[in-house]
Length: 289
Image 1: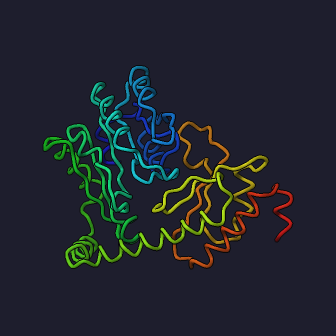
Image 2: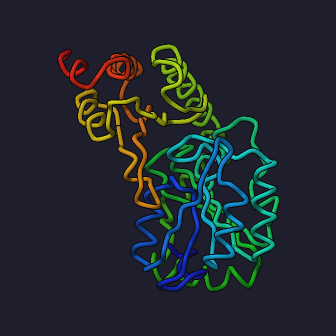
């Protein structure tokens, strides 16, 4: 919120992926900003559509979640990142890079902060890659002058970061605990994604071997509301696409979370139940309960 509050004022336009992190939608609404979604393919936002939106909408910023994107799980390849950065530079549009999952991949792609450091606000947190309770994040600003008003805005909103949380995070980073946790998260995530690949019908979902989620594109005649209702009893998190659609035109799809405290066996059972549902009509699938 602090970054977008500095870059835009009420009524201004901020661009994002057509399917974006719900928190960004909430922040834009609180700040009175217009959030405009850009069309996406399997490599991220379309650079030509981005350039066209810059011409038509005069955006104040571009928000991206470029690695293991929430909700679609895609990671923008380096060539597409370079094309997006080129457009952003041409139109002087700052990039807000939400790199919440950036530490998860073993082989990492250079962030926008490395490709275009002069226009990128890079956000990296610990909640996704180490533990949800570690609500600590780090921001790399484009230049020193940008950091001054940002620091003032953060102090006004939060007074200060929790010293205990920051001390714990620092200790874990320095003594290797954070690396051990990260290795466990990678291994468990990969095991759950392997289950999904083995159990679910091919072509019904998008995923990455290290993503916490699946993006399920529903076959007819399933609707997202019917699917979410059908899966509610399984105990794993299912969120309809409505929560992520920036333009208010959600597809018939849902995000399925494979993480959380549930056991691997419970995940297996939920995936088997889901596979049955995706292979049958809603009316037939509902008879198994």
